[in-house]
Amino acid sequence: MDAQQPVRRRTQRERREATVARLLDATIAAIAEAGYAGTSVGEVCARSGVSRGGLFRHFDSRLDLVVAAAERVAARHLEAAADHLAAAPPADLRAALALMRGRHRDRENVVWFELMVAARTDADLRARLAPVAERFFADITRLARRVPALACFPDETLHLLVSSTRNLLDGETISRTLVPEPDVEEARLDFLADFARLLAARRTSASII
Image (cartoon, rainbow, N blue to C red):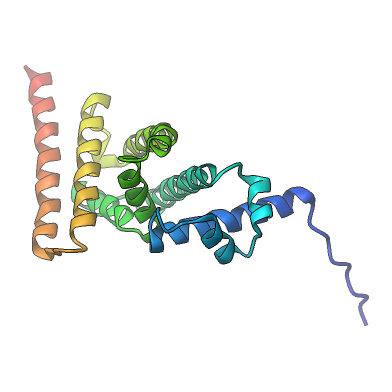
């Protein structure tokens, strides 16, 4: 009979990382389900199983926790999109736009919608979230550069295309909870793809002239 292997005790760092992960996952789930206003410290503690004292050992305030959760959502969003691009690069502009839409509609991305709306009237949240959002949006544009169909665009044009599409899909994702228009939504991808092709054609014509 084999001797039982001793159970390795987790290091203090591993325990800390596990606790922080539970708190962030609980915060993300709470914001997605209950909204920013409904995500209290008590709610996060109840969902995570971490005491208030434990929470405040890792985060100085509720705001710090919420901003860290936003950063976690952004990182996951970018990682998922990068993995998809590595495994199956979209064949054309429409496929790339469909991928982008899918990421916008992901359940966790709702956290960003909730926080952006809340930041409109919460100056402290707005000040803390703005640089996080700026980095996130810039990273989305840089990631778009890896899409073969978008590689031809100069930086300024790519930024225009990605930021315009991002804003449009943000609005679509929110409005469709009240008024879903599946036919219009599908046609919208065709419209966006045609718009991107027009930008590419204009650039080609200008370079020939």
